[in-house]
Length: 334
Picture: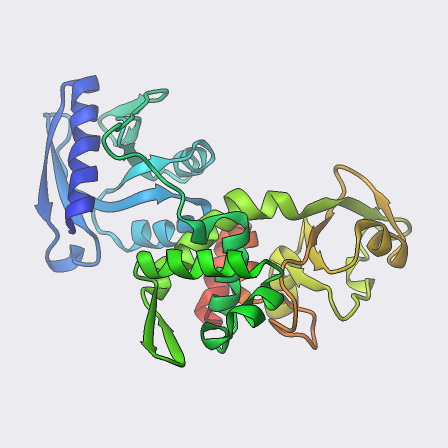
């Protein structure tokens, strides 16, 4: 349990205690619980069990598959303690009976003896202002995506990175500086660099993509003019890619898509005319502007990189898609 996790845990439990009068004590995880961060015992006669704890800073959609796995693996009642848990995530956690407490003391705990639900509490720490690193702005996220999905990109020239990511040279320089400052990128010698903390960088990218970049790429929703269920008949051009549920279906043949996600280098009008689509705000075909140049993913099958497919699946908050995302990364690495 690292220092930051311990701080978040104590802050969350302190606020929970202020709201409820119930104290709690953390202990290091051991034995069968070693895969979790800690255990916690609530000092109250209504709690007769020790809970297994997982700490998170920001709890996002893409964390949900792992949380479901942790809950299933734990032989104790499971509780998530997070610095920030977003409302849509809280709703999902409640539906799947995952207990949680956030740093403001907002709580959902259900046992056979007690139900505690607290919501609407705010927490602000003026001593630790949050600043957005330039690596995770809309332009920075394009560069980071390329670094994570193109094995050679970490050693591309600044100009080539800018061309492939579709951003300015200045944006690339800002992104590289931001990644180096945070310890994600390290220079080995004059001609080579290395990505460090890849898992954490990937997590940060998914969060930033879902929150900041993806909404800016949305070109519109459509339906087919003739066959509502005929999305597989669409013939994508060389610069267009399947992602999300459609890509997962084409890879694993398990998940029947409710939403068909496509990234294209064509304009909205060009894509609509080429594929005989009708604009429909509720339509199942969702079009996004492709945000990279060059070949990534499986170009023969028009499949976006697995990282993007995973990000789009978990962004749905649909349990079907979240389960599929978990299975997808068991079979395919980022």
